[in-house]
Image: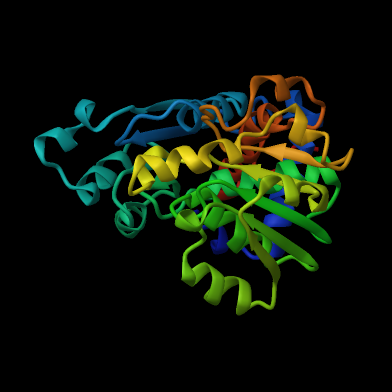
Length: 307
């Protein structure tokens, strides 16, 4: 029995097989409609979620399985003080696989240690969000035809953004990857990412403050939100916030085959005028999230691929 707690739990070869399965689903979705007949997915969401929870539910329903679970801690026995360990022991009697989101880092690991079914980490605090990373990888591969030999720009909150940290960790395993890290000084990537991941793996990267200056270099632009609450004073926020709003003017500086991704939700960091640009891929990214979760559920349940 395997779990998915961290994107690095799977080797590059295993990730590539999973992404290939998800790609097959994109083109032959109807062939997968009954592969999980009789299987149950438990969605254990201790904090609110829209995209991730509904994406998991959609994925399991597409496979012919069924879904049970809760959408907040208040609607579970956690409100009575039940531990994660006890909850997962109980859920293991009801379901074949579980997707869990929890505000505390490491909660998914605790669940995996006490479960008798596969556990998928659907986000644990600011720690990991592996299925978002798998979604990002599938989206990039679908759009660019590869996960190697490209320059990836990461823009916005690079200090606290778990999606950014997970994506860097995953992509450094592919050859000839370069990063442009675009953020205000207050929100640069943490030193452990810079030293233990990028430099330790001899990855080319540069840190810049200007999105405009970076645009022409990029094959992929991964946008995140610059959050007001991360700044020590309002003046710094006002000084910097407009530098990281992607609009039509900035898009004119980019390559014709550069694509824009975003883990969503967005606030104002991507102007709605960009939505009509064929290089805006963040809503395609949502659809790819369903396919990759379908592939992950099948893989962890060891369900055979249809002929």
